[in-house]
Image (cartoon, rainbow over all chains, first blue to last red; front, top):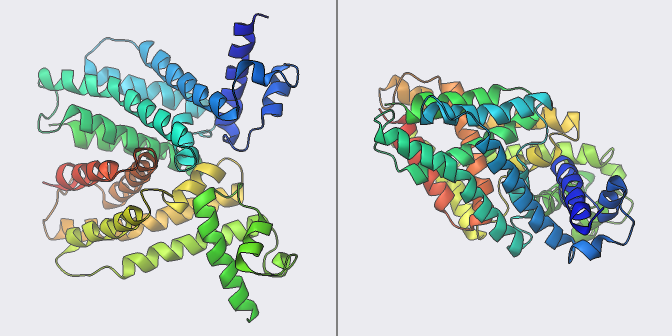
Length: 192
Length: 192
């Protein structure tokens, strides 16, 4: 495998393990062992564990963007928005409502511990709000939803409500927190 | 100190350390050392670390109930609700917007890892929604807020939105996520 292939494999294995176990709970040796990459070669690819973690945040951000980009674009911005969340809910259903949002998990775990993590996570969460902001603004232009709310603020509130719903989903192990999120965001908050 | 005093001291020190560092990241030896309690006596007070953690969840639930009970009861249910959240925001401001909700943190960290934790956290989060549900129901009775939302569902959605706002506050290190929470919950979601 090329250097780039190995690096990508370490990111993919690490993304999975950190999503499941948390960052502090996942050791470099475990990632290397699971990836079948020789012990000791980690520092050939990453400066240190924090550098690896920061690149993981970008990796998760890229996964989010890729998932959003795959969603069918038909039927108007609010229908698109519903489908975006549905993609993720289908994912959580397949995994028994475990895991949560990897970016939200890292914000919780690393936000207080590491300034570089904090900065990267703050930017990534703001980027996650962007496709929501964009669709809210479009829906306002076409008169589909209420116009007395700021699209950027609304998108950030929705991302937070989403993170909170995923957090509660972890202890409920059911789609109920998501159902409430969907109901309150689409039927009460956005609707005219 | 009596057995009960030592137990209470271990809970208080443990609550602080776990709030700051997470459960898996906090060792029993560290709690004992910080509390000045002889090494090895932990199992005199708790069955194991999980038993200690489950009692911590109850401890955090008790702190939440105590904080809510101290809030001034005047001026109507919605004003009370605003003051409840203000108490916690004042707390986070004093601590530089670090820490987050200890119950939300544990839900994130332990929800997938331990069924007994999951059950206890689920119950505790539902209990945290109760003083919110109660005030929403009272405000609906007096015609202060919209009546087309279920008080119990609304309270659970608000708790999740709150947890998500605290999570983002950890990476923003500012009250902005809370300001958006307050604006969307009180001015847009609840208002008629």
